[in-house]
View 1 (cartoon, rainbow, N blue to C red):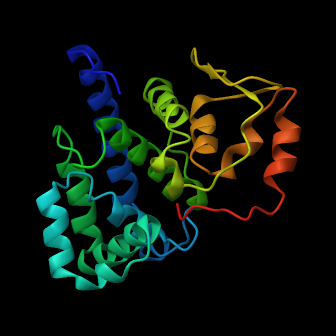
View 2: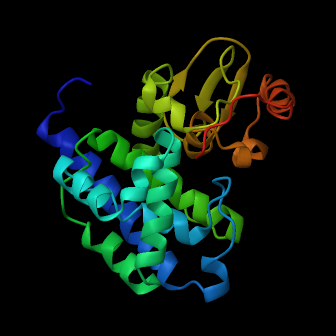
View 3: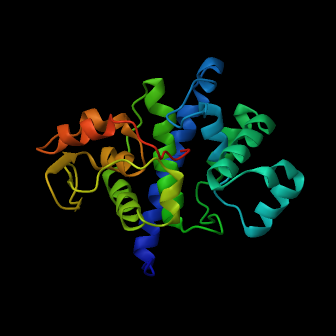
Amino acid sequence: MSRMTTAEADTLWEGIDDQRARTARLLEGLSADQWDQPSLCRGWTVRHVAAHLTGQQLSYGDALAFVARHPRMLRSLGLNAAIRDSAVILARELSTTEIVDHIRAGIGSRRHNAFVTPLETLTDILVHSQDIAIPLGVDLAMRPGPSATAATRRWDTRHGWMASVNRRLPYEGFRLTATDTDWSRGDGPEVAGPVGALLLLLTGRPAALSRLSGEGADALRSQVDRPSPTRGAR
């Protein structure tokens, strides 16, 4: 990742703060039943996803201390299992009020997890907020600007280790084009839609496929419907 200018960093963190604030407002209005509903992440409830979002500012020391307090983490097999196990632990330890408070407390901070960049923090809050909102039938908009920034990051890292945490959808061979901002990537038949929907596609979420159009949209949907041998945990 090239070094960001001060203005670019300011814009990035403003997008993170905006989505954190709106996600916190959504969560504090949920009923007890809604907290325990399934999310878009297979095997994760809304509570698990929300608890996961409380861990966006971990230093290496914080991560080691968490493992020391919870040695069962040493038995987690692989990155996806470790991420899910930590979310389950946090969901048990924190009340719903504490989860909301933790997410809201991050607003204005520029700390991020030591092993990723702030671009992953942005992607995490954007996408996981949809993992919560969409199954609950709540419209929680993602701003086009931050979504385009996250989509670019996911496209640029789609062959790297960070892509392994998501289900791999067959978007290669298509031209992905946003209809609400100036963003396009790939080659082939066009698949067009809001950049937030494209971001969900790039992070392995088929939930927004119905919002996509263009000459390649039906072909993409038919490929996604086929059984896939490789699926990420989130």
